[in-house]
Image 1 (spheres, rainbow, N blue to C red):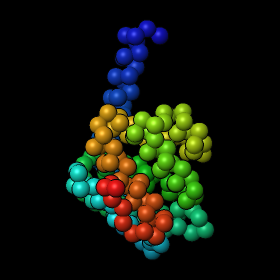
Image 2: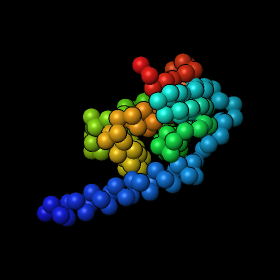
Image 3: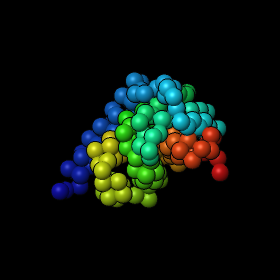
Image 4: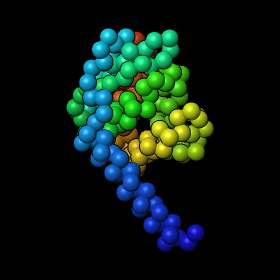
Length: 166
């Protein structure tokens, strides 16, 4: 493939990723409180002002229901929306592995193939979540994209809070 064709493919992929982020940002899925939640955690990103509360109902190591509430930039809302869709009905182990994969995608420490290898049962979810990888070019936006995931891990750990400031 020549350089011009490669550049067009990259532009097409960036456009698709932007569409996915905008879709989830404008029409978030699972933006509500989980009834009979077994865990809840609040996430805060003071750099951007994002505030997300994640609630889940977990039974026998399986996330039966997952939702979020909050206010923030399109990236944090889209990330929370995609996360909630990807992880309903999945194990907490898969959730933790997918969180690590998303973190890798967002920071540039992993590519899509590596993320898929880390969570082979969620390859379709990784394809959609790859839309978040564009934040790696904007380090402050990495925190926006990963905040809901950090809140989920805090929720599963019973910690109650998560922050992007460490």
